Image (cartoon, rainbow, N blue to C red; front, top):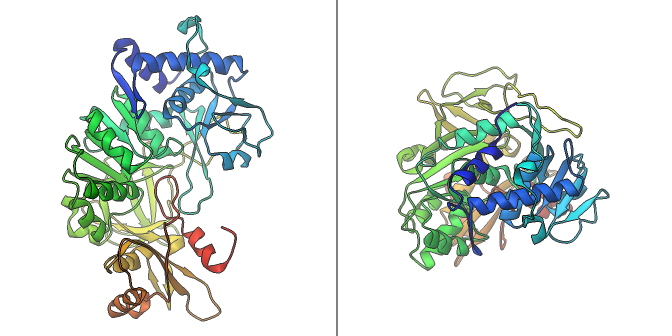
Length: 479
């Protein structure tokens, strides 16, 4: 049987039960208390008839309850999937759903409402509770990766894949040296799962907050020394910090992923936050593939560099036939790392790791193992044979006065060339005409024809912009 990451967490509880495990607005939960909550959840899951082979959806907002249930379901031999209420109707092969709010109306199977009693340990002995052994290739977790489409894409995780993911996560920057870690993404995403369970797996304290406004007092009160967040959350944290300066003195590093860090964003962040910032390039299917300090990357970052390839990762650029191209040659990226995860299909019980993964990004790798991202293959704007990444246009738009955020995309029209649209979020006086003039001065190829101001840009769980939703707003399709 393969080692259990849940057993490692419970071992920390047995060794040092008073050590802080989870920090929220409500207070601190120790490892001993977490172990008791897990034991209670195991007992409750068992009584609910949940056991080996069941695929259970979790619609649970409270991070403590979510973590305890993930551990409990692992122990009883079930497979967990963290979802939202809308996704309850998606065909994921779920046999039951555990929820802490209203019963999802679009799921016809058994639903169990969880409350505080699910996490209150009764007199039952912990050692007598179910503990189903698992093989290394056995399915134990399904993660949802939506990318930029906004549609859930299920990814299959085995015991061995999760073990590799959690151990390599500790090699990212100062992760292993940190003791108190802020988890920015929701636990529903694999990004959030990896942060939280890597921290607990290594005996650290993991902290949660619902917004940037709450993150500041959480960091200050608990003395958080590492924040792992999305690039969008980094933007929000910098905005809050600039309005109420203070509270981040304990931070020794911020790790930000989910998007590239533009020049304007870098300037905004650096004006409010002084600690080192690590940019990371990762995916649900392949884990972390590259990382690098945004300060050390310097001018390379403006050219699309997202970091240096991780020691456990191999990334190559391929042509349209899948043939690998030499260093410094642009192409569709192909990734091979430790702990590759395939697409999940209902009925799957064991996981076969794929040889490689195509994330849908276009870029290249330099001879010094620097990874450059030029854009999403599906989002490249083809103007008269010139392929332009949305990020190229977005960087120009961000240089204009009053622009806080920008998203560029193309829509097909009856004309020969596509129509380039830009949606912006403003933070001051803004002139759409200035955007068009500024882009025209650089290149007529990338001049937008539509500039629209919106209150916010639609994003997925990791902070990536959902371009399809913006495109449908222009074309009139249902979002």
